[in-house]
Length: 285
Ligand SMILES: C[S@@+](CC[C@H](N)C(=O)[O-])C[C@H]1O[C@@H](n2cnc3c(N)ncnc32)[C@H](O)[C@@H]1O
Image (cartoon, rainbow, N blue to C red; front, side, top):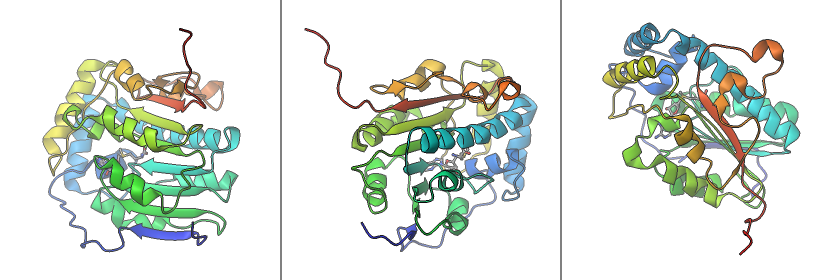
């Protein structure tokens, strides 16, 4: 594997990204909910309608970012993970995966993956870190897991454990595109001892309000994109064949809160962290 830490943007040859500002985009609506500045009028209209249906959506988005920080710290500091494949990167915000990981382990290697042209336009901001580490950005669609794996191999060592980060992205894959198969395909390619971390909007917490959020967002999204909220059981199924780490499939603020003060919060988003077991458990015959 080349030892140059600056890995760049892949594929290196791509057409100039087309950014359609007349319709909402999930990355930019999320940026608006996080009080970012990389959003347009259509994103703000969609975001405001979501907030009207479920005011918690703003706090839940913030709590999801806090979960990202806690989970990357946990993986780097307590599990010794040094490689991260972060799918559905989002527009850079405070505490991106590489910043949290490389603060603990400067040699950490991070591959970001997103299919949004605005995220691509900001990718260069993600590509800075200590010389010991490596960061790459992959302009790719989660629905093409084999392309992601092939490109990720240029930066990550698939002989060593990798944390697959899928925070608030799987809801953008409708059932028709088989999100559980996609995750299984990615996990299958990772070595034993690897981790999956995910968060996902719930269909079974405040179901009427979340259904409204989904309907309103989907009415505004462009490019054929749509959101699908899922139940706790459906979220748990993404971890099939893996060991779910305590405290299990819980809401983001309930996952190993920093202290008692942060353990409480309004209803939010499902999350889970799971580990690919070291060996197949053979059941006694
Ligand atoms: C809500 S943001 C989540 C950002 C970050 N993971 C977090 O939790 O803070 C979802 C991101 O997933 C990206 N995304 C949506 N569908 C995708 C797909 N099919 N392939 C790759 N990225 C996708 C969007 O562009 C957006 O940047």
